[in-house]
Image (cartoon, rainbow, N blue to C red):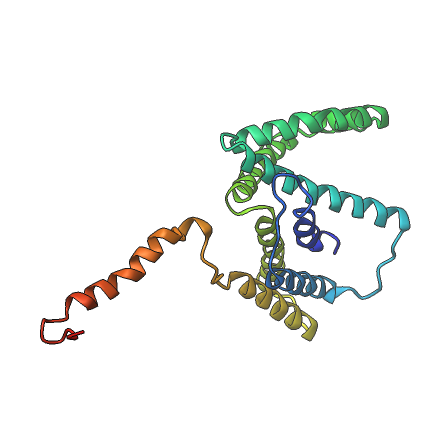
Length: 237
């Protein structure tokens, strides 16, 4: 449920990242809220009992959500400032920076040795890990490409909509019963996506003509109109 709200902190965080200072129209915020609310309703439709929240868990998940929104906007800022940065370089640097933070806790808790022994006892796990690594690589490169082309907010909106499509396919494939809450959630998700896809009627700055050129174009019809006058039509005075 917390991960479903990722698009909102990404849009808010974009206004504070140096090099971006994104300002989104009210329509995009409203479409993001519709998408988030619809996905939460669809996700919690099967909950038979109310979830138990822990203060520590809420703080940790909220911190992870804030850092995740910061990372997406930071990557967009790097792509914007340095146009020569590639998706491979970004993925490599992100992995290298994160590795030192993962290895020490795994050594202290002994999880690294337990995982190594488990892989040694079950060799098929190596094949699963290789397949997962390749799939993760393709997914990360795709996400970074979306960030570089469309921005962090649009990428977060796409990944959030992907969760809705995954849930819907699970209900279709495994023939799960759908309730009214599922239908309301799907309607809100579809409304949010459609609102996001509405065209922006503002003309981009790059496509606008210079003011001097516009003045020259506006003066052409008057000159042609004056040239059409004959000697008889011209006033005597």
